[in-house]
Image (tube, rainbow, N blue to C red; front, top):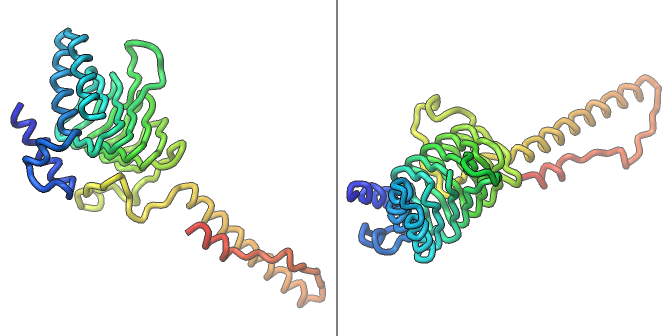
Length: 247
């Protein structure tokens, strides 16, 4: 028990630059308190003391603002940062070294009992503030969920999900191929990563600009051959303004 607690405190010290001492983490971090109380509630739940597990979970929610159903499975070194408004459902599974920020919901979309209704987070997943992960699918190891994203389908390992509904951003190369360990990403921020919809729009703008240049070249060639086709000012296409808006 105490070794698990030490692990949890060390993990918070590593991931939160605001943590100044282990004593401060032990006494002032509701995310740590919620995880410790959940272990007690989860033990009661698995031991057949279902009402007692729910009662402990209820008081944990009252004290910390974090609601974790006693049936949920929470791994080692899980850090719930700030934590207010976090809701974790009964069949949710959270892997080791995950980080969950305030306002996150790991919810279910089915009303049938006995089914896997809530998501599974792999190891090292970061779920950012306000994100909603809804359904009994898996978020792969090392994946990130952006702030306020609504995730309704699986996320591959190492990928980032952003938007409503969430869209998947895949890394340029897996961390293993890059030969470097993937560093912790606070709030799931992925450096130099664009929204896939923005990338698609940029590609369409570039393609339209290229086609316009070709049309201009064809008109110039016809003009030299004596075939004069009128090109009104409204036919002019300026891609620079659109590219500026997409930055």
